[in-house]
Image (tube, rainbow, N blue to C red; front, side):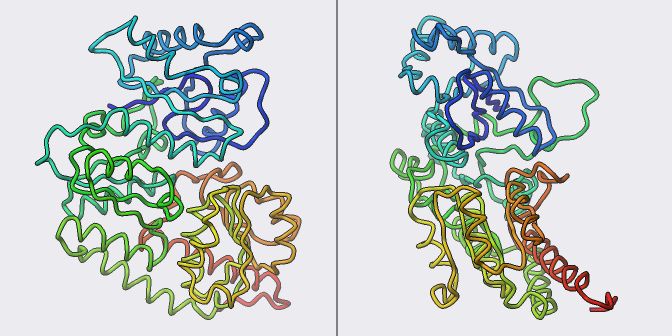
Length: 439
């Protein structure tokens, strides 16, 4: 079982990081992000910390890091340890890879866990940068070319919900495809009830499957901005000549069609009839509900690739994504939105990159939006403007079920379409002087 613990305050399994000022004590960083994850997923999340003090902040945290790794091995017996850095360790210049190499040389154990480190200071980028950095670092450290005849598909699914991950796996299984998906928190962050506490939950991507990524027949990485970065899929293409198919998150019909086309191209198999039917029902729903959503206006915010996928979906159902905003600073957001939205310039869409919620709130007031769609952090703005907020993505702190939202595929588009349509109908119904009961 693949298990990623964390040393230094950032959970290697997802690389989540919030944009915040450097904290004086790294244990606070660990506590903060642990609570952040638990609040969204409603599952226990253990994060170890190397516990900087005033002394180690001056003289370096190498000794603490080595002790933390030893303690994790003793207490958890993990197959893999993920080490993420915090602001303080990066600011004082600790060479974490060197410290870990020294530890491994001194404590060499052929049966011991793999150790993967990734640079994740919270003053550099957003949580999605840490997520993708952790995936790339893991693949770089473990993937090998051992069995060229093994084949299979590497899937890098983007940072979505455990329910999305289960749907990805269902789709690939229905194609009869061999695949390796990294990460896979479909069970670890949305698991069944325990009768007793488990230090390491069941699930995850097995180490042997990460190693086998070097033998894959092709990689699919999901995210249009991700396609412009040094991703895990491109690393495998460079190291092992594995074709990398970079496409957008499969949200809505157009982007989901592209996802299924790529799987068909790699496997040589047509789309299973089950999904042909799901697609057909979705088109019928679009026709039924078009009169309610047409020309509604939305404020869309979140990490860049989710904003692009959601804006593409909104555009195809007739909703104008009037404001598309993200804290990401890739510089590609507007160009990618133009690629997925027909008549982009004619719709007068405002695009904002590298912004916070104060800036988003100011722009939202000028967008004349009917609803907001994004994570819980936009609630204050939506409440102030008396507009409904449809919660998607991460984090969702003020509602149940964030881990069970399906965003992807025809099935996810159907659920999103129904939710958006019913939200618009309810707003009109509540505003009606007679409170009509038939649509």
